[in-house]
Image (cartoon, rainbow, N blue to C red; front, side):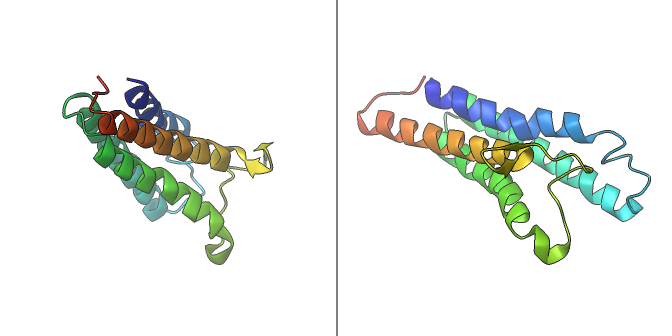
Length: 137
């Protein structure tokens, strides 16, 4: 059950929290962004939320933590990758000029890293339970 809860919390970050934070004038409705960039933002939010719902179905209905973990790490790992290479394309993980850091990482990067760690931990816990012949229900 702990593995399912950890994975669910991680999935909720990119399924609910990030869209909540980005459907506003700083992102989706930002008049300074080209229309094409806003389209890509809505596409990314919609795709990630749909994949998150699929992951929740995998975890709670199909009881497949492994595939849900892989999808979730691809999504949140993508955030970390984009942050790592942001200098190469002129991007920034910051939305505006405000910088908040935790342990030397920008808040958004730190949150993505925490989610990835939670998902890895959920998968490891699930593997231990399966190896003992138990179930994570």
